Image 1 (cartoon, rainbow, N blue to C red):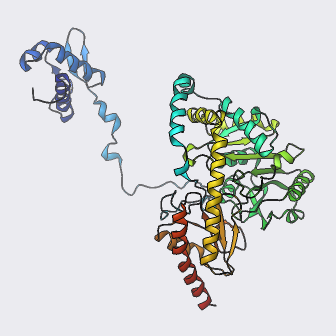
Image 2: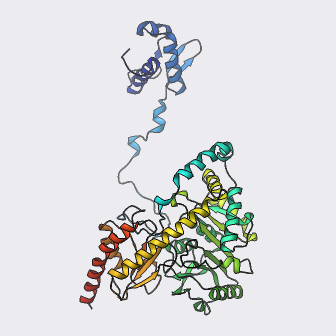
Image 3: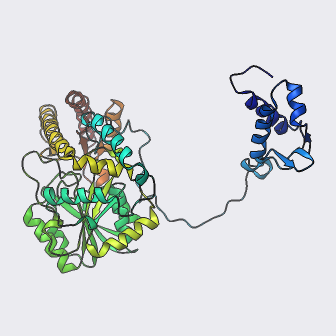
Length: 483
């Protein structure tokens, strides 16, 4: 036998298998007896028997009582190969009906730098996350609940996490709910898709903020909704624009920190929106985007908490408060929708991993979540102030800066219509990320940049603005030259 680090039986098994695959040992060929093979090779009979048993288990040979061992008629490897003769070039293609989704889905940019590069929108400060503590809780949770967490979980989500979320949103956001109204999702986007599948029929009119979150528009459009744009003012959704609308099935809004313009909807406007929705028999989806990070005042209570009627669906996520790869979000549903939503989730998305839910529940139970939020609120406040100060020091005065008092992003809005996508591409070549404001409009787009400062260090904020300022000045000069 050739020398090798592999056991002798393995070497013999590989050698015999290769003879079969190459055709040197043809189908129906009888294999010599194990005693004869052992004597010929100078190895123990057990070595040969082990190799033959392995080949038989894999379907290369078969033992026939009273006759011996033979090479099988069918080669098992053939079942895992596509015969070359079945692959035809120029084969006729079927023309099958497809829905046109090109205008509905959001295509990721192939030229974008790493998603956590400086000024990426929606990415938190990952360097500030307590990963050592998280790993410790992860390990202890797995030891404690390993068997329970390895099976299929409750479609609503892990009970412990739903309890913690219920406590948190009641105390911090004024939401009125029980753990039984909480449904765990793999993020806000899945929550929006689930609600769309549950409430929207093809042709239903859905009112959305303009500019607004493209992910929500995509979910509604994929469900067949007819989108109606509602302007956004410096105070958020323009509720007065809803008055002339009829037959609206659903309104989507980000009242705590409007995306992308970063406004907070005042209490009196929230009450007006709730009053209009009641009168119009309309659902409201409240996406509580970035509500946790207010730098100058306490956040205004949620729409869901202010509502006296069960027509508000609350959407939350841990992507910004913890980290995006966790893939955990939640819906707070009216009681009458829970069973239906649970059925939709179970039918469309199936089971959801439970270990991460259990770790997050422990993280919240032990008080680490609120401690982390308090720390991040301070960090983001410093970054926001530094970015606003640096922008005002280096950019032309006629450029508007929207936001900076909350959340993890702000907007640079241009008075002139500039090609903001081209500007973003130039900024990426310098190693920084951003999002073009114009792409978030349904109608009458304005130009600008959305800058996420959550994942940018103070040094990167300074460097990024120094790289951005001359790009903006060039873009403005080029625009004026063509006027």
